[in-house]
Amino acid sequence: MNYMLFVVYLVVFCLILGKISFVRNARINSKLLIGLFLLKILAGIVIGWISLNIYGEGNDYWEINKEAWKEYQLLFTEPAKYFTNIFTSDYPGGYTGLFSSFNSYWNDLKGNILIKIISVFNFFSRGDYYINSLFFNFFIFFGHITLFRLFKKLYPGREKLLIIGCFLLPSTLYFSSGIHKDGVVFLMLAILIYSVYQSLSKNKIDFKRGFLILVCLLFLLLIRSYIFLALMPAIFAWVVSVKFKWPPRWTFTSVYILAGLLFFNINSIISAVNPLEIIINKQAEYLNLPVASTQIDISPLQPNFKSFVSNLPQALNHSLLRPYLWELQVKSVLPLSLELFIYQLLFVLLLFFGKKDFDSNNKAFLFFAICFTLTGFLLIGYIVPNLGSLVRYRSLYLPLIITPLLCYLDWSKLKGLVGIIKKYM
Image (tube, rainbow, N blue to C red; front, side):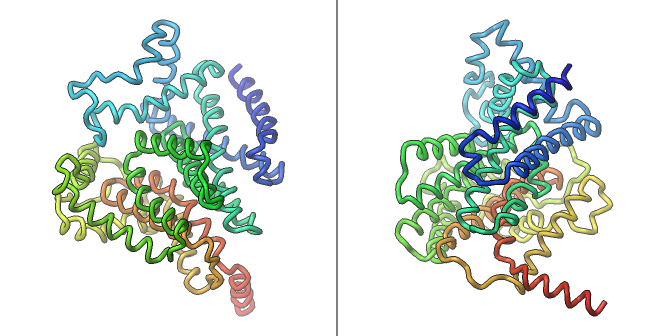
């Protein structure tokens, strides 16, 4: 019965998808669009199957689905509690610990928001994980569409490359397709960045875009607070550069110098605000978790400038270069090592075969994407002590840097190089 329901819902979603104006305006061939959507659904099935059969029912993806079924049942037994429990805290500290990763209302809220959403899907799925995954990924697919529309405005005429960057990056596709916070974060980031870009390009912010920006920022603050923090200086510099027509290089440099000074000194001005302690506590909470199969050594941070600077090379190494190719013996990171190696190779090729005609209108966005991504990578590198989580968190940033990279590579020169190599082989 569940198989039949899955097929029926899948057909309905495929029909609906082509009728939505936002999707139609992306101007993707209808057959290609359906193919990309089916690939997204397949990724959701694969991550669900792998997580169940390798890690067991206690993994995060299936646990969220199980808790959502309990919430669905609660709606019929205690409807008042169903509508209010997301706002109540049972912890002795009440609503403290906004940035805490354990024993905190705010930490639980990250999962509770998603659980509440999936509980609504249970009206149609009766708790079936794969049907819930289908509904979940129907909405998350709009994150891919949104990014495609954004990059199509930035890099017109390069649709094939944009399809690869926005839909087909393996780790992004995989990790954003599981019933987890990653998919929601991916969708919120896409909508937020697109809404900011549209507001800047039209030189005004209307109610609809302003509302979307605020909602996305709120969700990111509640679900992944460090992403929210990484976004603030990047968006501010992007907006200032475009609005005042200031050179992006100097605008972003100035903003990030000021942000760095605030980061390390704001506690001496406002004692209640201590970003150093937030990062250190996050790292400590991860280090106190059971040792994972992909655990890596990470140096404990101290609440001072010297410690953060001395740990900077390690943090960037972990977030930009790990897993190494020689870590292929860890089977769970084998595909991820190969994927990362391809991206690293593309960056090297960009140095020799990059296009010189950078569009000045896109420079502010490019600086935003690079600065936001590197800040996010840096925070991940400081905090996360295992490769599995590191790769999962990193995957959500990849479209923002890999898509422009693909567009700035001079593929005609690369084809010529391949031709010369073949000739002499």
